[in-house]
Image (tube, rainbow, N blue to C red; front, side, top):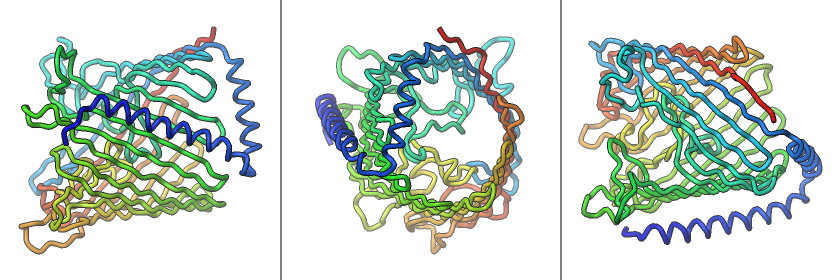
Length: 467
């Protein structure tokens, strides 16, 4: 689809934000209908008074994480003669958080490395940066946020974008470098029961003299992004949220750089909680065109039930359902979970983190059962996953294979040794089928995939100054 992007993007942005503002006003008029509104309003008023009297502040903090790993099947399936990898990586962030009544400024300077990858006697050395290892020292986040009143602000600059349970938009904290966006975000929060945010981004690789040809070197990224997030606490037990987003990728054909293919994702989540029970249903539909210009028609579903009626124990049972390619369809039916995190949803071994490549265009069905025990300092998690290919497209030309891919079992323990020190360790293993080796294009069924890690996270506050 050929698109004169800037005018349509501006028009679309204005339209979405106008609708969002109208929704916000509607929500404010409806809030008096709920029995919980008075108490919530009282709390909001107290917070407003407190905010009005707070002094200016500057907080300087460190976020340093080391992670030692033994990999024998993490992300890529092993074979019988594969030997395990062993290494330690490190991420360090120095954070500056400045706040006033009407203005916030935040900066996070980040360094990532694998121990021994760089020559410590010669600075950076000649190591070539790769996706999961060393990055040059750079600003992970840096943004300014003026507050026009106690409900409305605008965040401008490089920032993390995290919405809902981070399935579509996440900080991806597990990844060594994390994830941030260069964007402007309009934030409305009535401090009672309604939040609406509109984020807009438009990327270029440099200061072009002519044209808007986007040619990033060494990576692939969207050219344009618009996302609207709305969360409405309807009552004490019921919450509704929705995410509607459009992201555009420039045509990969050099002569066709004026074409931007737009992908649209729309849907949301309904949550209900009562006593010790929690029920939720999430669903999204994708349409438009994929990055290759093919028409899209894909969907995602996630039902879940959670019970926390046993002391210190929480049990979660649910399923993720991502559509895959229908061999009889002329459209692209692969659902892509945008810029979200897979690690916490589809198993810690990250077999399925890139879509549709990691599922070989076959989609995925992921039933899961989680147990979590937690007290003041200790958290113990046990996660179980079953994996099925959603369609037979993944096995086309590979004979008659079963859709069952395998089972993954993850153990994780967190211990809060000190207020600024969190110790985390995990052991994960999987049992895979022949179908899984076909989908992943690696490994064999006789090898034993496993992964162990030990992580230390230090988060001390160096100083907090008020003035």
